[in-house]
Structure formats: C-alpha cells, structure tokens
Image 1 (tube, helix red, strand yellow):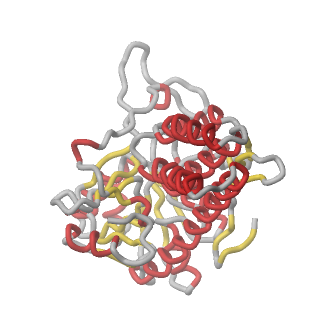
Image 2: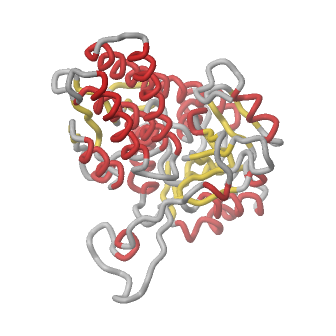
Length: 368
C-alpha cells in the first residue's frame, strides 16, 4: 500500500503483466485478512464478480475492461477469433451483474477499441496490446476521477458535520479515493473535522466490514450503526448529510433523470434524511450515468436467499421453509437527491437539464 493524500492506497484490481492475468483483492475476506486472487479464466472472473469478491460500480467497470482485454489476450493470434470471443464472451461478462451499469460500460469500451483496431489493420498482437493498455487507462481515469470527486465534493462538508454512509463506496469499490468517501478524505486532509456513521448494510455488512475498515485506516472517526437504528441515530446525533455512491444514474432527459440505483437501503436513508431536513449527496463518475434506460427497463438484481438466511459466521437465522427477499439495490427518485458529485463537477435539480449539460462537458466518460 502507498499513501494518496490522507488515504491509504489499496490496490483493488490490477493486471499482472508477467502472468497475463487479472489480480484482485477479495472483498469477501475483509476485514479479517487481505487476500489477493488471480485468474486468466473468464468463468472464474465472472464467479468472483457474482460472489462479490470484486464489487462496486467503478471497480466493475475496470473488471469489465480488464476482463474483455483478457478475453482478447487469451484468443489465438487471429483477429477473427478475437472478434468472436470478445463478442460472445464479452456478453457473458457484461451480464454477470445486471444493475450496475459500469460493468457493461467497461466491456463495451474495450470491444469498440478492438473493433476499431482490427478495422484499421492492426495485427492480433497489436490488438491485444491496445486492449490491455486501454484497460489500464480506464483504471487510471477512474483513479483520477475520484480525486476530482473529492475536490468538488469536499466543499459540501463542514467542521462538526455528522455524515452517514451506506454500503461501501470507498477504494475497495471504486479505486483511488473512492466515490462517496473521496469528499470525506479530501475534506479531512484539508483539516475539516467531522465524524462518520457507517450503516451496517445488511445482509453482507459492507458498511461495517469495508467502509469502517477503510476510514479507520485513514484515522477518520467512524462509528458503525445497524440499518434499523439509522433514523433514530440520525435524529439524536443531529446528522447533517447522507453520502452514497451509485451503481446506475438515469440520465435520459425525462422526469426520471437523476434517479439513483444504489445498494439496498439508500432509498430509506434518503427518505429519512428528507424528513429530518438533511442532505443526501450521491458521488459517482460519469461512467455510471445511463442515457439509454428508464425505470421500467432497469432490472434490480435479486441475490441468493442464503445471504439473508445465514449470518456471515454460518448460523442460520431464518426458520426452515420461510421465504426471504434479497434485492441487491433500490431506486431513489431524484427529488430525494440534494446533489450529484462527479469528476466534472456538482449537479443539482432540475436534473433533466443539469445532467445532459454535464455529459456534454469535455472529459465525460459517457457521450450523449
């Protein structure tokens, strides 16, 4: 690890040049131990994504890019074989998790790069090299974006604030300074003092296990609260803002523009924040914006019932024969979102005007 400002630099995913494979920090092992896994097998990568060893919207974008580059690299030295594989296997990778838009975005960027390289007469070896180098550039762009999110978002944080987080939108999920954690880290580095209440985020406790782990490493005061005590604690502690990441932000110019898809529990926190006259801020790179879909066409991922039925230690807590629901994400309407912080700046309502204007700004990762 190395230091980035006040934040500990965790390397959540990378490409091993010597072994020609993807390496990642297994999120399911945190906070007990730091275990890195690696593969050059697409099936293993997809399982790692589905098991949440690799998770978080921007990191999924990197995994999509590296995974598609790996598909190309694994192909025989034939452009026709590369094209066939990145089309067919790339589709499998893009569909590994349906709600987070960054995964399919990362796949698409490398696919389009490969299509153009082949059309321009590049050799199979050159195509493979370009795919891998572009995946690395995507990762660096993500890291740079988190710095900019921190720079813009820290202006929304004041001395004495009490900030509530949901799930993990830190380095583990987003690289660099994280997304929702980037303004916190940047503000703390500037000498602004506040405290953080990290919600458990059941059933897999990414807030307790991951966000608290990251902030504690950076000496930022953090306390963990269970999800069902959030409203009471927010009122009693006089919390000032909720900070959340996003797995998808609708960006088509309609009344749904600015709708946020994020970890289950975000909508509830945003509703409570509005009732308590608090702010809800969402932080995400522009690669998370979705210009193609509306509320009716976004599928919220339903995860295995075992995640709810069984505690992390293996104890079953749901009576046999009783059903459970386990959606991974929820939808927060734009009227509950005070502002969206991106690498290009901060946007506020009306989002149907401000988001399209943002995405036309040079440097946007999504083009209108």
